[in-house]
Length: 284
Image 1 (cartoon, rainbow, N blue to C red):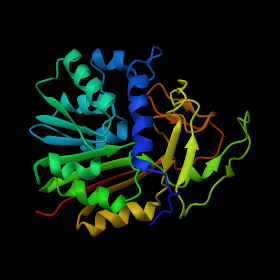
Image 2: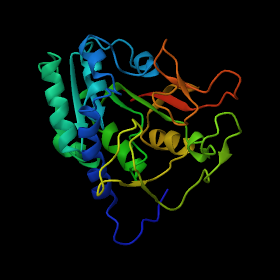
Image 3: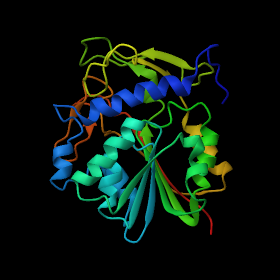
């Protein structure tokens, strides 16, 4: 999909400024939305579907692409041989490195600051047993095929690519402000040809975002897009899932299930696919 981007908008620079700010806000959040304290006490902060599809990590070298401040990377590092986290935010990499030290995992995890499209320039080709990316990492990228091609080039033959994300159809929906029981409404088309430019007053964690870094440029991808880019790389599909529970409150009516830490619509409301996950294998 080729997206129209307004003249004069450098979407990578805009999104870098946004996520560089968020990497600090989220890491230093006094309300601990990400539950860093729980992680430091030994909790695995990956989403349940991520844990399931990643499986046994013993002896594996894992790349966590677009790792933010490294919470999921370090959760995986407790089970893997080695984890490398990649992110284009300097603040994210700095905070992830600090968190690794706090968790006693500096010998098992390292972090690299680079644009994901440049990952092949800073990491060795076919050097990872698993590539892992999930939850809000591709909506900021105009070239989804370029993303897949770059990362698949880092995967060893026989290795696995695990990806999980909010369901593309769910992103088309919205709720009336203050309405916790009415029907969701279609707010945007499923297929987009134009980039979406938004101003965020606050993060999905509820933290206010300072002026100057509230702008974000987004590129909605379809479910077909995700299948297509991996198929184009010659990968073989092992698992595909759609599910209701996701790691954040996409709609205000969603409530956290204490059993798995995921957010769901309340009982009695329509059951919708809110997320999807896939696991691919690179042929030997």
